[in-house]
Image 1 (cartoon, one colour):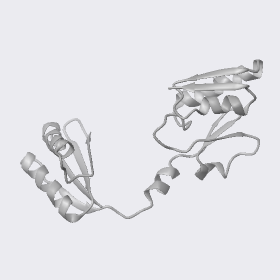
Image 2: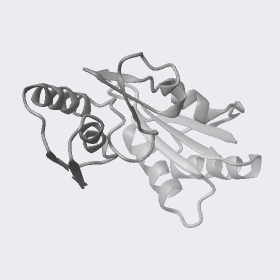
Image 3: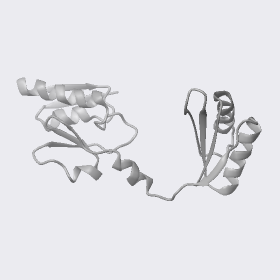
Length: 174
C-alpha cells in the first residue's frame, strides 16, 4: 500500500480530489482532502501498488501545476488492532459498553453490553449514547420499565440495556 500526499490551495486540492475520487476506474483506493490551515489544504490518496501510486501522482500533477505529490509506502500494521486500541470500554452508570477486545478486562459488578465497533451508531463513545444509558439508569431506578422503545437504535445498545436490566420487551427501530 502506498500513500500519495500533496498540499496546496483549496482549489488545487479540490480539483485533484474530484478527478481521483470520481474517475472510473481510478488508481486510488481511497482519497481524502482536508484543511491544514486557512490557506493550505492537504490531499491524501492511497493505492495498492507502485504503478497505481505513480498514476495517482500523475493525475495530481496534471490537475494543478501548484501540487507536487510525494509517494511513500504505508507501514504494514494490523490496522484493525490499532483502531480498536482507540475504542476503550465506556462506562455509563452501571453499564459497560465495549467490543470483545475490551470487554474481557471489564469492571466487576458492571452490566456488560457487547457491541463490536462497526458502521452502526451506538458503541457508547458518542455522548448521546452514554447520556441515554445514564438517563435510562435513572428511570429504571425509580420504576421498572416493562416495555422499552429504542428509536434511532443504531446498534441496539439501549434496547439491550433494557433487556439486561429486566424489561420484559424492547423494540429498536432506525
